[in-house]
Image (tube, rainbow, N blue to C red):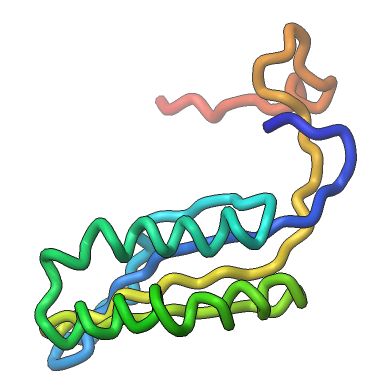
Length: 128
């Protein structure tokens, strides 16, 4: 989406991390720029509906609990421009979706015919 001025929206991420025995993580799995609260919480809802058949019974219950009972609180918080987090734990992995209010800034379009002048100042290092 191309914009000419700053625009409010939400930065959404999906992270996974082991919850037992392993000191790695968390790992960023996906990110998404949403331009409305409904679009942001829909991204999480679609992900939860998609993975719920593969989750263990407890994680599936957590997912459907959010979908049916807690999603409305998430939407209200987003409309107040408050950050939100949704997590489910499957086996030894915690999956967390975060949604943060942000201001998206317009940037130079990557497809313009002429690059900005500063782009020509970069000189790649040549190896010997």
